[in-house]
Length: 77
Image 1 (cartoon, rainbow, N blue to C red):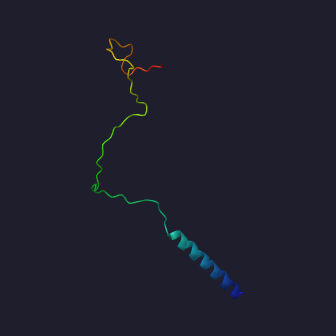
Image 2 (image 1 turned 90 degrees about the vertical axis):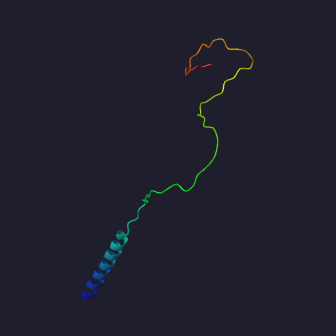
Image 3 (image 1 turned 60 degrees about the vertical axis):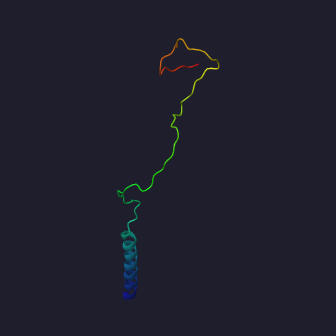
């Protein structure tokens, strides 16, 4: 009986040690944030336009005397 108790106790201690070792390592996806100066610059030119922006132009030359819409008014056709 004592040999069986010894094997059970040894197995228990090995299992307990394995559990404690696996729980002791904390896996984290956190990163350390540090404040520093910007070391690179990008020099470029371009235009920023909205998605719904359109350019409207006439197919004929002439002078526009009046408009029937106001700025910002939504039209259908």
